[in-house]
Image (cartoon, rainbow, N blue to C red; front, top):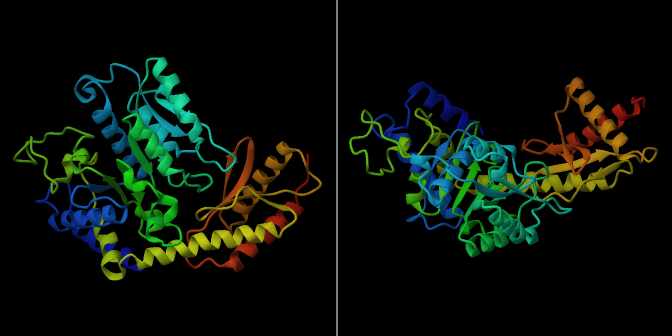
Length: 390
């Protein structure tokens, strides 16, 4: 949104950090206002919940996972190191930053309990119990379960209520990576996708994906405010007078970053000017356009839709009737994408679902219409017509 670009100009000119209140007091206060407002939208008690902003979901998820380990581990990991094998349960369709964060924490491959997905690319929750028991029998201490809301490749939402029930039954931490799909909470049409998120112990949501703010700006929320201080145990005599006291206004006590931009100003500007109506309209439009695009694909005899979209992500492929071999179809679609990028008019990505390559479109631009989508389909068919099989 243009307003956020102007807010960014202001913050770049001021160039105040937010590690301590004394350095960037206005931005620190705005960050708290934004955090409390979003906590309320998520269904948390704003008097008990708290959070802060950080530079991207990779860092936010790492911060949340470190809190999980420090809170749920049976030993003092922060002071004494891992000492034993800890693990987290996560969908095999989770964003790669989750895998990366777990490995950064020193838990290794054994620290990642991947749960298979069904034909709709949602976690098979009926496998949670057996996977949990198998890990325990190996001497692994399971700390938590991580949900995708929504997944990266297909934009599908996990069954949050079911995952919350499982986590509660086993005294596990329940974390929701809602970096992409969290803003659906603002939409009366789509917030049902997030039913159960109010039971999460922590939630991550990007402002730069579906909330019209420039990158990078991500919010991490904790249902219990005191948990937001548990990722790190930091002391800095030159920054904080009271080293042992948790102070919401000294953000450096909770964040990985020692220097952080005044990112709260951008999102506060939108909230102050438009409230949440702007985000609802944006989510409704982009999610709705994805469904329209899916309907367009269904009308094409040489296009195949991977699954009905639940968000603004659409996965599909060009599938001519003359080619039936899955490997050949994947190679063809990969080649088509390469040629689309070389052409320069459109940008799309590809993803692998099961063993096959699919084209993937994420509808982010509010100015995109069916005209551009129809042009994309025509471009794909034109390029495919130039393909010469080896």
